[in-house]
Amino acid sequence: MNYCTECGHPLEQQHHFCINCGAEQAPVDGTPADGGSAHDEGHPTGQEADMPSADHSPPKAMPEGQSQDGHQADEQPTGQPPEQQSTRSSVKQTAAGPPRKPMKKRTKILIAAAVVFVGVLFGTHKALSSYFDPMKDLQAMDQAVAGDDAEAFVSYIDVANESLLDEQAYMQYIKEYEWEAVKAQYSDIIQADDSLTSTITNIDGEPLFTAQPEGRLLGLYTTYSLKAEPTMLAVHTTMEDTEISIGDESATINPDEPKEWSLYPGSYAITGTAGNMFGEFTYDDSVEILTQKTTEMTLEFSGSTHSFSTNQPEATLFVEGEDTGTTLGEIDTLGPIPEDNEISMHAEWTSPDGDVVKSETVTQNDAQFIGGIPFSFDKSEMEEADTEEAAADISGDDAGDTVLDFRDAYEKAVNTKDYSLIESFILEGSEAEDELQEYIGDLKETDYDYDFTSNEVLDVEEVDDETVNVTTNEVFVFTNHRDEQTDYDRVKTYTVKLEDGDYKISLIEYDETNRD
Image 1: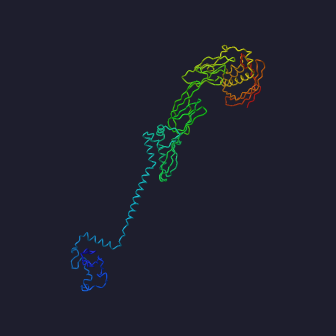
Image 2: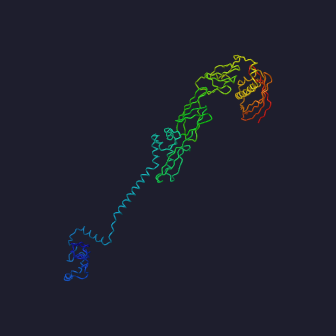
Image 3: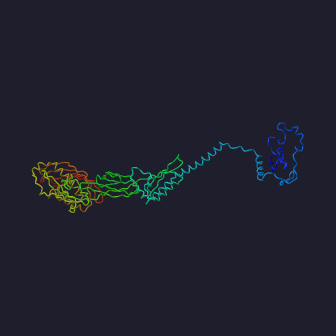
């Protein structure tokens, strides 16, 4: 049983036209639509020739909606539900166009694989963009600062291995003074269109960090390394061989050799130790380092310094009974002496015949004496040396040495306005004594400075057994109260007399003076 492709009316197999609507039917078994044989088109067989001609003529056209027997089409049962009738109509219309070529299985697989690959690639890109997002580091640093987690904060920063770093102190400094400005600057750098090396400054405009862009995965993703910029600390001292420690580092420094440390901002403990002939000194303090190019500091050891006087500069100084190996003429002052320690001192002088004479023992508390701490030798306690033996033993060279020693003491005397420093070199009651006492006395109301640069003995002439003339060339710089300097170059003659085994200056004559 067949059905009309237009109206769905039931048809016999030999019906080539619908007996209901007259629509031509497509062959379904390979038989031509005109009823001819596939082997003898247009020539009927004998059996077909005997069939009535009406069977070969197309049925007459019926009025619309009416069947061949005169009934209305909608009254004729079709034997099919309306849904199937509609489906057959759609099939008829579809069959009218060229059939669509089916997609190959391999093509379908390739398309599906491409879709999956694009999805995976996009997802990977989003994941890597999130992983390498430098803003995540900034957010993590902000959380570390808020939580006082110094270790976590420093983990996002590159620091120099040779620089000192106190992590907690460093983060605390950043948190208190710099973080809000740093956060804003770093955020601007990250979000900028151009990835460039940039400097993050502190509130004073000094470099604090350097943000360096770094390409990841062939440059497709950009992150930043944050390098912390250290500062310099220069440490000075007032004492020789000072041992200083900052953090875990130690060094030995001297007054003319300061030490520089590279370190990061924060608070650092500094300790120092030093010593001299008068005792040991300690220094214990801390320093606050900010972001500046160089911070200067000096270790000031607590101690006191005192002046002294003596009538025998060649005497050796003893401290706490120990020989310092230093003569009084070799030092300008006593100290520094540690605070809260009373130091006992005395001086010893060896006479020409080998006898040792000691001065009185004093402490730094005796500095209230005029002229400073006294190291005086009582001549009545010194054994009298034989004048003739002394004269025989002392040569003109000794007289020259006496004049040079006098010049050393004289420089200190005129700069401190203290005649007692040269008293032991001058013959009592002599013209030299009167002139020098008057000259040094007049200096007390002045602000002058003398800098002796050269003292040279040109000639020694023995006048008699007790008198020697010593000719010298003396060069010095004189600075007045207006800081005006004058260079002096003088030739002088000293008359030196032997008294009680010692040479004493009795007269000073100026032979030639050149000034500039």
